Length: 401
Image (cartoon, rainbow, N blue to C red):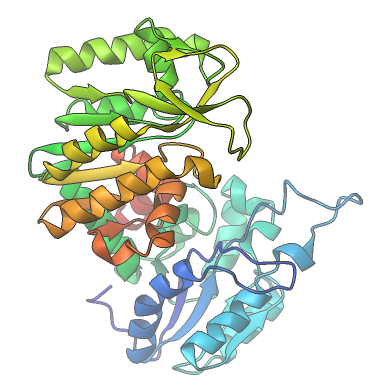
């Protein structure tokens, strides 16, 4: 992107503005918008005009009873309005994604002006990677920039297919996308050791590829969240009513065995905060994770686990964290995740490199005001996960091909 000449050009830019919007059409978290600003400003300063494309939610899967799109709920119009305020300049809004009106508005843009087209997912061809739709999108710009890392793992019309209709010298990554890829590269290509991966979340099945990949990269794997109980049961532990994937117990045993063979230490929670129901109840107690009584379920890691996990993190030089340690949304069961966030921040301040990827991990870091105390917070949970698993991202491949 830094080598492109933007003067008097029209730039078609794919951004990740899939942000939360409340019932009053107000943006409630502008993180993704703010992170796209450096690319937008750089292009405008270069003398170009910009046509922004983005998606919002899943309108095709949440159609109204009559089968129509819920435009009121999924329109990007409020996002365009919010961006206007942030930039201090009008962001024109086009109520269609492609077509005559979109092309006319794009053609009328003067250098320094910016417009946003309607939600790309309003067209069913977007998620199907439709070539005809991508061709129509390509008519809106002279240069294509993809700065939507959060959608880079999707082979959609606006994230991958559209790039084919621009010559190689007229397509590029944005500054955010470049930063995401460079930070992932630090983990995959040149990590300092000891290297610790903190993995949480509900299911082993969601993280199998990630865990297998980490066995060849890291020195320590800390496992928390619901997925820990499948591993504990695989070791013969008693887990009460805790979440377990019975069909993955064999997989968990294999991962434990492979880790031992490769000299990778897997750390499971010694104790757990348990409760008789999946609710934010004060009726909780702490028990050994491998001796949870019937009628109780593990909802967070206990004090001993928090201390042990924190000690491993504080001795690390490279840290990647994906997934919470407990039911983070419930205040009684958020302490484990908070302890990990504090430990990662402290280790970073002591010189470690840390990357946070995944919705709840990012939410924890942001809620605690620690985002500026870690090395990098990724905007793409699914995309970062697939990149760390060693998969090729369609949105990245399309620019490089």
